[in-house]
Image 1 (cartoon, rainbow, N blue to C red):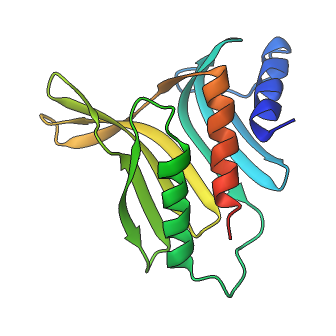
Image 2: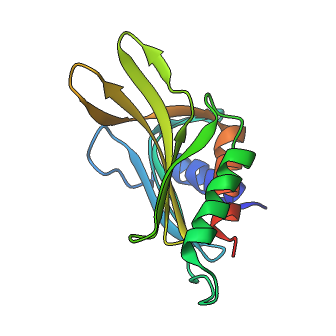
Length: 172
């Protein structure tokens, strides 16, 4: 069973038992668990047996990369894997920036969806070669700032995204 399948199984079981923690905001479901040497954190606005409305999703591996691995090179490889593997969402990904000093890489939608003067885009923030945080944002030209917005993922896409992010942060 893959990591994505384990998470969906736990969510569905918890929902049936009415045992999923709510964070008190918009009745979101929150998961923060260690599974298969990965810490999985996610916030879901709602879900059913077919799909998930995901606000945030992150995976962090427990073990740091070997000291012999250059973090900038690792982040570039991980960002390249995001571009190569995660092609099943609404927009394809492209590396925006690699911050060698803070050990971060930012990967976003190459061509954001635009509607009524607003831009919607996905973002994956790679952290220290061991973590990946996925989210979707809305940037309003009028407000001049971005806002975190939930995105709709089918069950298959949700599981695949979790599995792909986990595989990417396992790279050395």
